[in-house]
Length: 266
Image 1 (tube, one colour):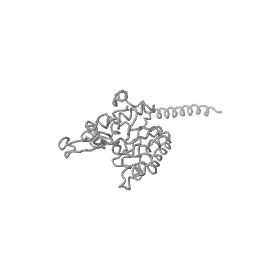
Image 2 (image 1 turned 180 degrees about the vertical axis):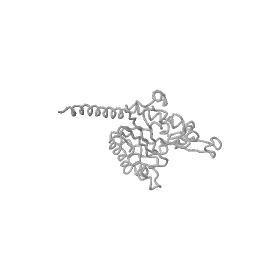
Image 3 (image 1 turned 90 degrees about the vertical axis):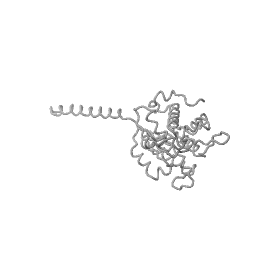
Image 4 (image 1 turned 120 degrees about the vertical axis):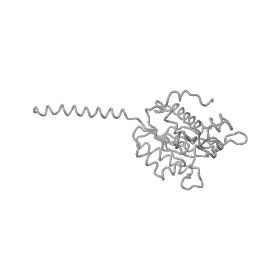
């Protein structure tokens, strides 16, 4: 080996080491993104400083550390079917990177039996749509999380909270079990929350406004499906507390005070 080659080899070797170091540092600096896909109960709302309505996913950035990015793609009125047919799922998939997470919550609008663009049968199309989300999330190297729908404030005259979701939460649970996916039972958690607040006080969790109460809703609003800022924060906190109990890799991004706050008494 001549002198020129001996001089060239160390330079090339040093350059390769430098490239490897830069790549390693870049990988370490990559922050995961938590993508949210779902309906209006999860979605970001416009004019958050004025609008009394909030989605629970909208509250996550203030309940988690800056070490994870939150990218909320949940949209009002979407079902597991229309989120796919409108191309919204493809838009999320294009952004997914290995190490990311996708939190999936549908069901509210899959129940719309008079709307052929949104309705799904729970044990057929809804089931297979959830499987599609899980499978394609994993194909991108990301981790799926499944949630059942939050309950509606639907107390009968005897003060009993009556279910409105039928078989959709059960199907979500079954798909999560079959595909070994982290499952957050928001139906159960929010049922307990509504019952704890009771038929009258639970109005604080939702949107019960009389004309003149709020300038954003001058005509008033009585809505037992969507959440107030208080309701959204409590639901988001309950979801994260349950996530922490399951020892998910996401637990390190949850603020300690969220975990330590007692919301449900039993």
